[in-house]
Length: 330
Image (cartoon, rainbow, N blue to C red; front, side):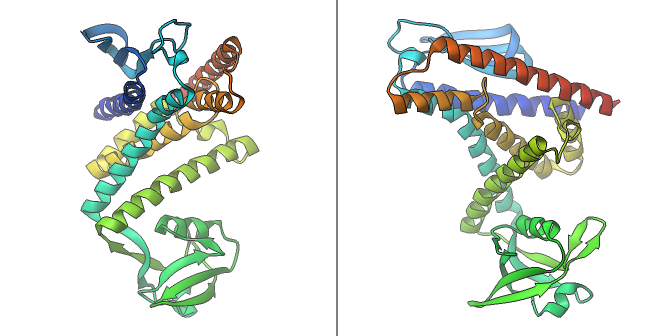
């Protein structure tokens, strides 16, 4: 039950800051906002402040920003559809951007308290392949199989993706050295027998958070490609129900794990909304970019039709994944 409540609150918070990004973007772009709602469904509380109504609704499953002229025609010069394309672009982009920014801040703060794994080797196992290769403690890993390394997560990833012998480029006190070795199989995948040095400084934590956000985005992208190529199936997707179940597991691991998980979900939310899929922010960004290039807006009826079709398809996918999650839950 605690996991369910925490999961719902996490979703509500992440969607609220997403919509809050749209809200701030609209206000800064002088676009009229009719309502900013936290939650969906029946109204619990609302207050009119200026031209905007602020609402709290009964169902903690989302939220929304209602902008004048966003989904219907309006003669108001400050309506969404009547605003300059760059203002609309920034307003739409602000939602996903806030989700990515939140994740960056959380990862940075946790790294500031705990430190983070660097690409510098701390210990070398004497009974592992690494010991015979010539690589020693203090060496900094620059690349594996000619793929640049910025995070220790990438070290594990590239080792597990390898087939047979791997090449490792090392920085040893300014000298660039090349080594070759063959990983061995373990219960958790392929290993070479090293542990990373834990570091903690303001600049390194900033860089770590930046790289982690893009590393997670890259992992999500690889997962999407796997779906389209058949490498992964729908049974490996998780919807809100599956995520709530994982929230309970992360809570058992501690508050820091829960916050890192929220950062991961926030990156998912931000990245998916940037995809050019009808009904998501990404499609609005694409339509706005096209308008900026050709100098005139896309046919409104065409855009609405595409959006409705995309919305139906997204709801269908969510329903299928949710049914799968419910079956796995019980």
